[in-house]
Image (tube, one colour):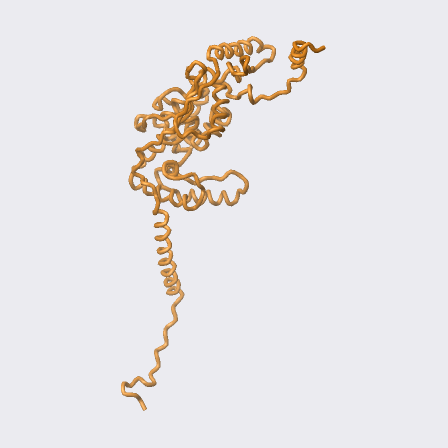
Length: 385
């Protein structure tokens, strides 16, 4: 007998099976919602301890080391060199164009990072084991990394770099970001910013840079030590040529401008290189930093070097090399000690401006028979036969 409400033997209507399109839509929604949740959690984790990007105007000055001779005369000041920010509008157009060409050709098209660039770099690094890794960082990412993040190589830091890059793009115009980058990036030899680099390498303000000089400085950014014209002129020349070729390919310079650069050699300033005792300062600076590490405050190092004796020694080496050049003499070195073993003069080569290789301490050679007169003289002084 049927129950009172008449539902005793009524069966539930069969449910209709989802179509393939409905299944795709359903699982797409599930994955999308969970992906959104995970994305929000990751974003919160990355943003939790992000630095304040409003501190862009604050520059941390690195300490310097001053080297003095025995009388207190300054031989050199080693450390970071800074200069006031430069307005890019006051620079020749090829100066910022050189940096964009070699560091981030799509700078004016992306929104802080280049997804295709990151993908290409990932594929290259995955298929080229054992070689140098290729980076996919844009100028904005480099600015974010250099100003706000540590040098740690991990996924969290990379994620924060991307996030800060997007924040910078939202707050500043492209030209403002490029100006911040060029005024803060490190160019090697203690120079931070384009104006300091122009002074350090070419003894001129950035607004007076030639096309070749601008290309050389732009090429330095990827590896200031590796591409330094001071340490490896040939490698620096090839890097400069690559910058110019890229600018030509991107129609930032004409063929005539490109050809003109190679008609005359780009010369690094000799102002710093012409100072006396630079071989000695290089030698001593490495020793000091190996003993105390990087200084946390300005330091003064008093040395035993005697500047007048040093100048005479450098002049003697230059004249000697010049005098015997026809006989095949190309270089010379000299270290003068007083009776108690203190260094009074130290010359590592004939011309520091042409070669910074320190032959006084690095060019080790066997003395051979040339040392015998000193041995015999010492023996005779001691009365030996």
